[in-house]
Image 1 (tube, rainbow, N blue to C red):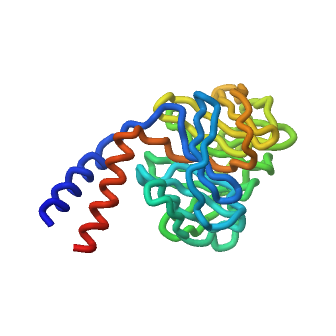
Image 2: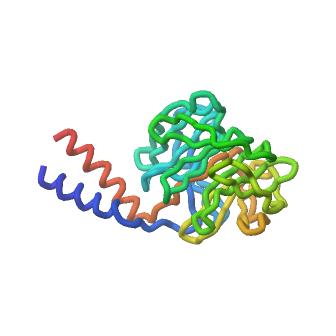
Image 3: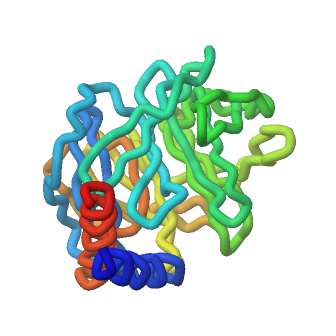
Amino acid sequence: MKYYMCALGCALCVLGGVLPAVADNAYGIRITGVVFDVDFENVTVTELFDTGMGGNFYGATDGDTVSSFFAVQEGGDLYGIDVVSQAATLIGASGGPNIQELAYDEARDILYGTDLSSLYTIDTSSGAAALVGSFGGPTTVWAMDYDPALDKLIAVQTFNPGAMYYVDTDTGAATFVGETGLSRISDIWYDAVSSQMYGVSSVPNTLFTLDTLTGAGTTLGDIGVSNIHGLGVPIPEPATLSILVLGGLVALGRRRA
């Protein structure tokens, strides 16, 4: 028991601090519920595990812990995806709105969602969605994320045209910033390590960077995997991942003791 308590304490001390992450790497979830390692630097994706929750995952974003991210199925069911235990847990339903994309403001602990044309806040403990307001223009917003450097919620309209907007988080109103020059954008993700907004598109199946001051997108290359519709939580460095796994094993050992 003493060993478990000591190891758990050490693991939690590390988890309570700032954990190093690999720059330019994130987890991505395919529409089928399969999770990938998305490497923006090398423009590759590697299959990691299947959540077992079936299909129709249309959006994802960073989570409220260092080892998990939020994901949403069509219809508005919110899940927590734990990358250490490789398990998906249903948090709850939206209560009506067909939420299909997410964005998380980590500093304020606010989860946002959209039904493609309006902004909502999402209760992270129940999944319930509360309307903030209509975007007032774009109607196919498949991609969103929060840019902490600009302190702005970024939204991208996927079709006709592929344009980037700033979204007022008090009213939901979207302000046009610029054309992305890209099509079929599935999601965007802000990498705090490199201070870069990245994204993925489904037709063609490419990774790209997004200039959040102008809206301009720059293609990085083709990944050969279709329908990655959600990005979230940076990939931890190997040593950090080992600590996360240790913490999980210790907690399990303590419960069995």
